[in-house]
Every structure is written in structure tokens, then in C-alpha cells.
Image (cartoon, rainbow, N blue to C red; front, side, top):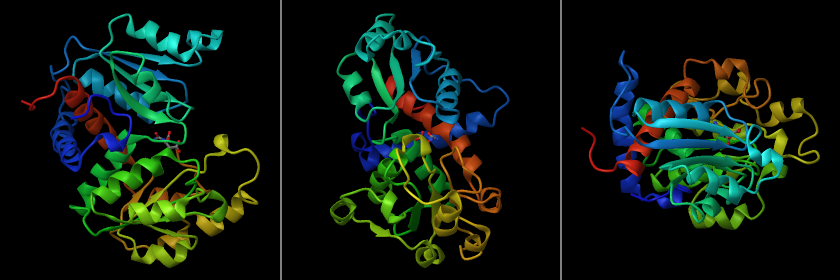
Length: 310
Ligand code: NCD
């Protein structure tokens, strides 16, 4: 297993399978009344978040606590970063206290890699700008495997703001390596530049026409329209986006009844996903959240303790 988790590239397919297998065992812990394993007793995990987060940060905290690690949360807003301290000084200060793992989210692509070169702690990327969000992709794949079994040959359709999405970039890597057939859909203005060459090399399809690909999907993953990363207009109006690229009630009717609907959250209801789709029986949005704790427990375990789970 890798030392740091900065990108899906750090994991082989065998590593991913190991992470999923351990996550399945961890998932059982989640269903117990007493949710505690001693595996990481005496270890300290810092969650350092320079961008907002609900599920990623709290699930890392819960994952660490259920493995008996001591967990501390630091956010950009409440830290000395807001007094002008550099990222290098902030992380070196934190790690001087004796920290085993640093889970970090930052608005700059490449921030986690940079930090991994400055500190001795294990660094886990919880989202760096528009680059990668590997633990999200792992929990997405875990959720898909729960529903579909092997992903070999299964058709996954990913739709939305691809330009600004780190979830998309990590998922392309994990899903293609796990053998899924992938089609990514976005309006031309939210399709990343250079995707033509990239899709050929990585082996996935691109489309501007959601209605053409949806009926053939074994699973659909809707991605959030990331207004906070947009400068200027990428589409004329919210209504126009929803009509062209939202998972609306009408489109839901064209999707196979067994095809799971995923969304990493937070959802913009009425924009990329209608309430009917978000709350449909085939929606696995909350299963993703639940899987998030199990997958992060598995990762913390393998990166910090290693060996077999007992
Ligand atoms: C994603 C993120 O932060 O990249 N959210 C998450 O971690 N669940 C996706 C998003 O913000 O749209």
C-alpha cells in the first residue's frame, strides 16, 4: 500500500480491492451498538480543512474515532492561516506536535502533494482544488460495487460540471481501472479543455447529449454545479442548465429502474438533480455517505496500521 494517498494513481487495482474488502468489514462496525475498534489507539489524526465540508470532514473524524485514534479538526478560517501564516509553516507547526496523519483539503490543486514533501506524517488528500478527491472516488466505487457487483463492463454515466470537479477526475481513474465503461456528459462550456485526447488515452466516452446516453446507463452519477469556482457565466440560467443537463423527473423515467443514482453532495436540488431523483428509491446518495465512513476507516487502518484486520 502507498505511504500517502494523494491521488487514485497511488493505488493499484489490488490495493483498491483490499481497501473495499476491509471497508466491508468496517461497515459491520457501523451497524453495531458499540462502534469502536482499538486498531489506531495512540495515533493522532489531524483534519486540516481550508475549504468547507460537511461529509468528508465529519466522516474522517468519525472514522478515526471509531478506530480509537485521537482526532483534531482545524479549519482555515479559525487557524493562523487567516493571520497570514504560510501553508508550509502551518503544516510544519501542526506536525511538530507529533501527528501520525494529516487529512487535508485545500483550494489549490497539488496542495496535498506539496505538503507531503514538507512533513513526516502520512498525508491523505481530501480534495485539492480541481485536481483530485481520491477517497470520494473510492467510496463511490464501493457503493457501486454494493449495488452492481463487479464493475467490469458496467456503464457508468457521470454528468455535470466536469471542468471544476475533482470528484470527476478521481472517478475517471478509479472507474476505468475497475473495468467500468464510462461516459461523461456536460455542456460544452463545462467540458474540460483537452478532454478529447485524455478520453482516448484513458478509454472513456464524452457526450453533450444526456438524453441519448441515459437509457443505456447501469448507474448515473450527478455532479454539483460548482458556482464558487466559476468566474463568469458558464451557462445562461439555472433553468436552462436543469433542462439540458439536470436529472429531471422526465429523465428519471428514461433511466433503468435498477440503475443507482449517485451524487457526492452537496446537492443543488432543482439544478443538477430534481427532488424526485434525489429521493427516488434507486438513489444511493445516503448509502454513499454511510460508505464514506467505512472506506475512510479502511484507508486510515491500512495507511497507519497496515496488516490484516482482526
Ligand atoms: C465534493 C467536493 O468537495 O469535491 N464534495 C464532497 O466531498 N462530498 C463535491 C462538491 O463539492 O461538489
